[in-house]
Amino acid sequence: MIVLHHLGISQSERITWLLEELGIEYKLVKHTRAPSLAPDSLKNVPGNKAGKSPFIEDTDAGITLSESGAITDYIIWKHGNGRLALKPDHKNFPDYLHWKDFSNATMQPAMLTSMFLSGAQLPPENPMLGFANQRIHAAYQLMDDHLASNKWLAGDEFTAADTMSVYPVTTQRYWGPQISLEKYPNILRWLKDCSARPAYQRAMEKGDPDMKLLLGAEAPEQSVMATGGAEGTIWRK
Image 1: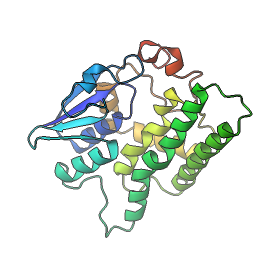
Image 2: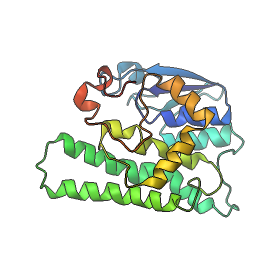
Image 3: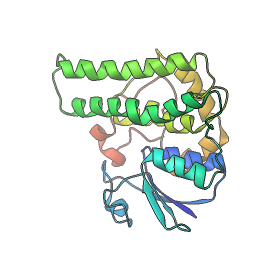
């Protein structure tokens, strides 16, 4: 049995979605932020002293694991018979590898840097703010250009590259930076296709039923962190 420890308004939505797509039985244990950081309930899970989420327990194998990319690969190959992954002989295998890791290796670090710099309340003319903003929009533009000629990130097939990549352009915008997607029509089209999938809808309803999903171009006016964390209302329906 897979036990998924899910933190609300977080990247662990990726794993809920993956499990729903694969039709794998799992137990969802939900944790609430306190009010923005990881709660003690997560830190008290055996093997998870850092309070990471997503965090899974494979009770049959006696395995615990954090990090969304690692969890994705583990579930696909250990429990999913390789579904939602492309194999090395597939023509789009390089695209699959690139985009599956792009969100955590490039896009999310750029967004987190901007989020932290914004929280530091640096003056607008500070060059570090401009540098962080340039990195984010370069990443968004790269994704948008790719999706102009590809239905999904790895081509014609929906894969784990897609389940890994929706979070940075949706829920992460609640935390920051509050970026509009108006200039990225192909990302918006892709988000519409992703959100139409029944497995995505089930996953979000199970994991974050109270959250207003950021699937359109509009961005929140303020961050969740600046408005009370999980106790605030800006992210709620």
